[in-house]
Structures are given as C-alpha cells and as structure tokens.
Amino acid sequence: ARCQVEVSGTTLTRAQPGTLTAAVIGGCMPDFPRVTQYRWQFNGGPRCTGGDTCKRTTTANTTPVTMVDSRRAYAVNVEAVDAQGATQCSGQASLTVNARTGPEWTLRPVLILPDVDLTWGRLPEVVEPEPGYYAAKVVAGELENELASTEKLRRALEPQENGWADAARIAPVNDPGGPNHGWAYVAETALRVEMRARINQYLLENGPLPLAPPPCTGNLPCTPLPNFWQENHQACEAVTGCFPAEFVQAVIGHEVDGAWGPSSTGHFGELTKELRTGDPRELVEKLVDETGTSGLQATLIAALNGREEKLRRKAGHAFVGGNWPPPTVHACAPGPCNPRRASFWRALHGYNPRCGVSIEQNF
Image (cartoon, helix red, strand yellow):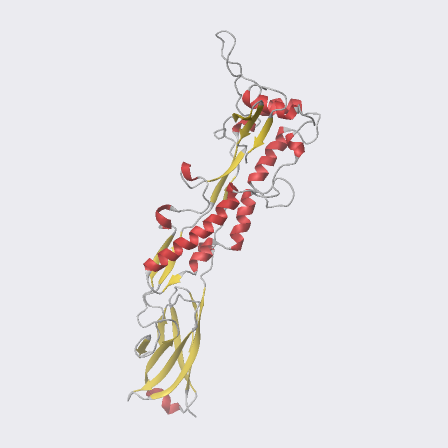
C-alpha cells in the first residue's frame, strides 16, 4: 500500500510562530528511509496563486509558519520526496488561525471614584433666559477622562494622540514562503479607558462656604453663608427623600452606575455595557492588511474613530435615558415658591433674587 502524509500543528494563533509537522504513515517499511525532502505548498489567500509562490522545501519533516489572516481559507499540501526527486506520497490539511486572547487583548475599564479633596466644581452662573425669570446652571457632577489633557477630558479611549499612533504597534509578518509573509498586523496595543467621577465641591458636606454677594455693609468683608449641605439639611429635615446626602448620592449614581431604576444606567455603567458590545482591544487584535503597514494604519484609525464615537457618547457627553434622580431629591415641597429650590439657590449663590427661581441640572 502507498504511504500517506499526515500534517499536524495546523491550528495556529495569530502572529505567533507555529510549527507544521509532516508524518509519513502506511506503505512498506523500506519506503521510509527513501524520503529525503518535504515540499510544502500553501494555498489560499491573495498571494498563494501557485507556481513558486508560498512554497518551500525542507529536509526535516517540520516547517515554521506565522499567519495573521483568519478571514480566508488556507491549506497546505505536503509531498514526501526521495533522493531522486520523486514524490513517494503526499497529504493535505486545512489551516486555522485563532485570535490572541488574554489580558493584553481585553480592555478592563478603570473608574476612579468621586473626589473628596474639594478641588473641582464652581458656583453656578446666574442666567436670565427671559425677563424676570432667573435660573442657575450647575454642573453637579461629571465623568472625565483621567488620562487626557484638560481640553480633551471628554474623550473615552486613550491614547489618541497623533492619529492613534501610540494606541497600537503595527508590524510586518516575517515568514518567507509562508502565506502571510509581508502582511501587516497589530503586534500590541496600549488602548485604555480610565475615567474619574467628579462631584461639585459646593455640594459636599464639608464643601466651601459661598460668600454673600456685594454690596457688603460698610467696609466689612462679605459674610460666608451656610454651604449647600448645611442649608438644605435644615430646610429638608422634615421631608422624606430631600436630604442633601441623597441628592449627592443621586449625582454619584448618575455618573457611575445609575441614580434610580435599572442598574448600569449611569454614564460609567453605560460605557461599560458599550465596551461589552465590542472590546476595542479585541477589535484591533484581528486587524490585518496584505498591502503593508500604511494600509493597516488607515484601517486602524477608521476603526478606532468609530469605536470612540460610541464610547464617548456613553461616557456622558450625550443624553443617557432613565438616569435622573426622582423629583423628591430636588424638591422639599410643591408650589411656585419651592423652598428646596430657594435654599439650593441661596446656598450656592448667597441670595435668592425672587420666589420661583429654578435650577437647570447639567450632569
């Protein structure tokens, strides 16, 4: 009976060197010593078109191979050749390329919990959107990018500088005679998501005391008023759900994992859910280009720009539905002269210009 060639080692991991092994089986025993060479012919993909492409010859029954393309079907044909160049037997096997896995290809978002060092947040601005109507616009909390510079805090993925140049290292495959020789792939990535939840310092229990606005009496300095926490704790002590502690917790929940209702509806929770729909590290792991590094760089930029847009919106720079504190957190009592709103205004601004003033929440 004629011998056969069986090929093992055909399940490969992207970009990691593998070894294919040819085993001659069957046939008559005297045939085995007559095999002096092995001819390897790779098939599939845009470059393995026959002839002398994707071909190599070895004296050992093994050959190294490095592959990155998992989108196309590949196979290898092996011939066992004797000293006279005659083929004794042959065999064929399909090649499988799996993704790289592990911590380096899985993005774990980092959350730094709200600051308590009283360094962030400022007094609201007084606005008069229409004559006789006064409002305060207050940024009660925010989810910021911990890794970006001040003017770019609203980004999600990092590093983005220089067209994502530092986000991933692109390298070529060095495997002469192999099916993916010269292809470009992502060798490693530094993609990260690191966010910090901040709470306006003027809302905290030990927050700063706003000064009464000028004009002040005589030459005396303006007198500090009770801060937001003190003022509203006294005003709301008889009203369920109105204490400033609950208000601050609602702000924290809005930025982190949900203020009310379903969990993971806070901005960081929404960001985490969006990451589960498409991990950026897993995304770049599978990117390859047969034309070389410049072609892959363009593909990488387009892919990360698209992913960043969705993540940035979830991080709090677009509306997150179902994630607002209930009315009892904002109001002590019903009516046009709401004492909760008045005390909120007075504690932050130092005065209450008229009954009926309202607050525009800007989370």
